[in-house]
Length: 456
Image 1 (cartoon, rainbow, N blue to C red):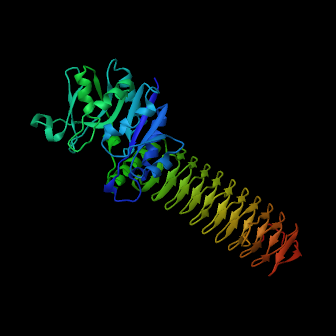
Image 2 (tube, rainbow, N blue to C red):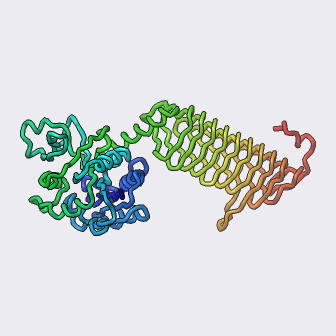
Image 3 (cartoon, one colour):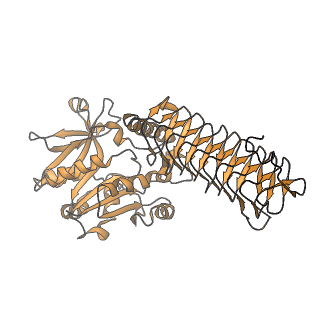
């Protein structure tokens, strides 16, 4: 059975009090409309259509390449919104799933249950999602027929005292028989304000003797809609709890889940411990047996096993196993730290590779460099990689020793086991067996004592 998903995203969202369209506000680091698309993709929808209206071009641009769009020029209700997709989808699918872009917690598993219910609803018009809440929030009540099907949706203002006691409510998510939907939508009558609502399709279906199935959401949080910044914070907190529980159940220790921010796209290995005030975002993968200490931010990075990171920022970087960073380290785009590297406090690395076992103590900057194995980088070292026009590369060979406050004016190469003295400004290559001394640095052959690896 071919499936089309229609995502309603045309509303103005005035209560957000924002110049940004409501559906482009982020939950879990991703715009709500893209979360809705992602959920539809997970159920294998053959066609994805987003109904746009308010700031249509901005929303259409955000979903381009992921979904088709149709314009609802006037916001005349949910029935009118879905009708805008009729011309595009008629004859292309057998089932139409209708969801909302401002319902970011809806799970694909719930939508799959709804689809299966409609598939089993032989001769029925549609299946709808319902939710049971202690506080009905003014939503329409679900009236059930003797056979358990949905007989009607009664708006709160029209409820009898007995109906007001009903706590099963309309969640507003539907799986329609496509052929029936397209012929039924034009039959919806407008309300007093000229609006057409999908809820009226229940009455149309029942009048035809066609069955409407109601499937209850197992988790009421799934159908929470976002209309204000308060709601936005509420769904963010719910999503964060959901994500954190997933990781904890898979063997990750979160010292304080309430202050740990992990986006859905992040992967974490078992026996890793994460301390409070940590943010893990984007396409980040963290191995097992790591310790991620407080006030660390990791974005779009790969972290190996048995690493320790303390109060540091890591962006677009790769760490092999047994790497230690921080406190107050900063790895920028393209940083690659091989196994056993130590990066001390206030060290910064950008677009550079540090070889196995290399030590970069503190207060140093390494940019556009290739550093060998077992290199000592003294405090205050800077690879001077930018001449105001172009970036240049620094190469440091295995077992080299870079003294404190060395300035390496790229392009420059320090040969394996060569040295720079403290305060050296290196403007030309340092040959093997030599040490660079002074400003600008002069090359002097290493004496036996100077080449002693134990010397400090």
